[in-house]
Length: 63
Image 1 (cartoon, rainbow, N blue to C red):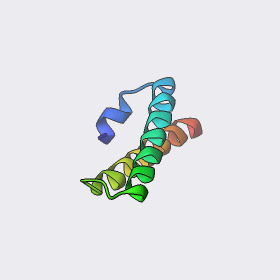
Image 2 (cartoon, helix red, strand yellow):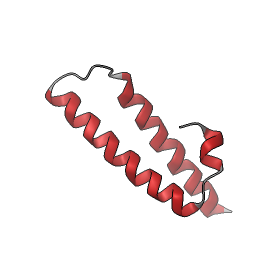
Image 3 (cartoon, rainbow, N blue to C red):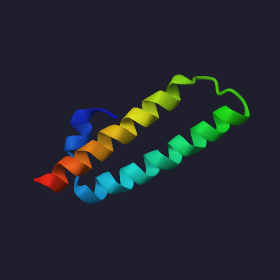
């Protein structure tokens, strides 16, 4: 998810997206632990998306 897409979302949408991304990240990590997934770079991509969304939420809370 790109930063420009994240900025267009509301706080409620960001929190919903964050919970979805965290669930996806946990599922990918579990699947990769059990047996290597086809594209392990997916894990890094989802982790970074979680960080981007969380950063945007905290930035808006400070304003």
